[in-house]
Amino acid sequence: MEDLVLVLRVGLVEGSVLALIAFGYSLIFATTRVVNFAQGALVLVGGMAYLQFADAAFTEVPVWLAAILAIAVAAAAGAAVYAVAILPLGRFNPTVDIGWIITTFAIGAILMELVARRYGTLSYPVPPIIASVNGWEGSSVAEVPVSVEQVTLVLGTLGLLAVLELFHHKTIYGRAFRAVAQDSQMASMLGISVRRMVVLSFVLAGALAAVAALLVGPLINVGPLPFQLFGIQAFIAVVLGGLGSTRGAIVGAYIVGLLAAFLQVVLGWTDYVQFIVFGVFLVVLAVRPTGIFGEPLVEKV
Image 1: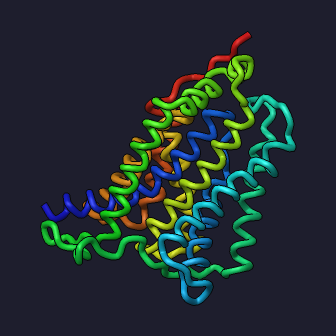
Image 2 (image 1 turned 90 degrees about the horizontal axis):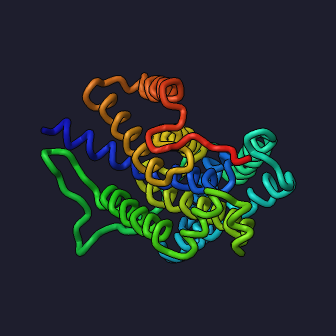
């Protein structure tokens, strides 16, 4: 029982972080057919912005305001990624002209380097958004400690993802997103601003990256190495779930999180977790390249 609860705790915590990042990957791919390899760097930007605003060692402001400012900074960084890495390429077919691989990877590397020059390569503690709920700071379930920060991360992520799914499927902007994803030329003819939708997808991806950073930061500290790893794992998750499918991204993220937790807690294979996760990734690519919920791209002629 203890192992089961521990697997669920570790898996849901890691899966929640990956789900927020993977949702951003999938949203951008759906509207542009481009994989934003700078997404991991946006997590770091959001985390360091939160550190900058909330930590007394820098500029101390209320935690809630620091969180809002960090999300705004990461959202702006997402828009900057589009402006620098995608916009200069002009009108192009992303399935044939793959310059976006170099540009998104390069802007991600630049963002990482700028953060490293400002803060170094160390990890820094940051304050939790919610430190307690009516005096409750945590408890034990089957002798497994569960903190308020972990509960905030999991429940906050699930609530936010539910809102985003409703937004994506029930609102005018959500329908515009889906229209651009299905046929950008037809969407443009119907009066939808394709560029606006694309920019908005980059902005939302940056904001989600910041939310992931400020929710997980109090648990593992904010630093380049763990956040880079989150970016890579989230890419694996979104490929497992199916690029372009937001629901697939969420499912893939929790699969990766629970798999990693099972390997660590039950089997004790801590040193082999990343190796096995990458192995599963390669198997899925070989057996079903479109992922669990993905569909093959159909070129209209």
